Image (cartoon, rainbow, N blue to C red):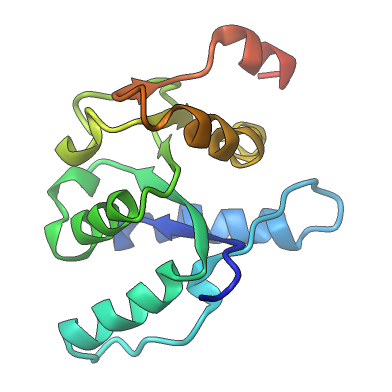
Length: 165
């Protein structure tokens, strides 16, 4: 098994700009933000068969230590890949960080995919500092609590205040 040091980012194609902004934060030397994206592993052509795409995505999962789900307006309706990717993340017991693109700092019951509503995942707002905090802290919390806790989790207001948000 390979060393798991990547972050698998799940998103609806309509929301790719948010993923691209995360990549830009990472590339900017003046911004303290880093993650190793599983999407950088092996290219997938747009005309590939679904089975081929899912096989390649599973390869990416094998290098992932956590997952981020970018939740936008249509994420909960995406079953072919988004729901499948969430299911794989859950099957692998990866810590999941749910990032609300609308800025909500807790579970958004209107937009959150049903499969995540009772799963132990942290729900945060789309903000560089909040995402960085979750990447640094959620995996340890998840590992310590995955056998005893379930359902949505969110950070207290004091965490956002400490981050200057």
